[in-house]
Amino acid sequence: MTTSRETTIERIADLFADIARTTFSWKTHAFPSLDITLGELRCIMGVGRLGTPSMTELSERLQLKPSTVTAFVDRLVEQELAERTEDPQDRRMVRVALTEKGKRLRDQKRRARRRQLVKALADLDDDQLRSVLDALETVHDVAHKWTAGRHAGRRPRSQGDKE
Image (cartoon, rainbow, N blue to C red; front, side, top):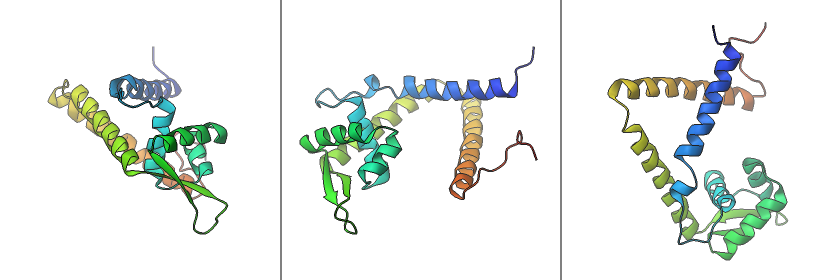
């Protein structure tokens, strides 16, 4: 019995999600000394990626309601992990930036996540590592081409698209 292309693509997507959940789980990288939730940590990582986003930009990035993100930011400000600033071009707009303490936490989280992945990959033999690298480089290239096409206002055609 052959597997359909759609089934294969769905299986790959499921595997990516499961790998992210198990390898990068919150419990694996918990910071017991901090009173911080997973949502607040996601907020820190989002601000870290975006720089100084507006609350709307951060809400869109995290795919959360603005009121939820506002609550997260409030807690991060209380813990001196983030700060609110005025937008220099529009004083009505509020931007969020990480404090030095917030940047240290973000960097600590990144290092912990990377260490965890390196440990997991160390169990593979050289041929398996090469196969994983080749496959991920292919997915990486396709994802970047697709994203570039989206930002140009169109999605690049894939093999399965009709003329």
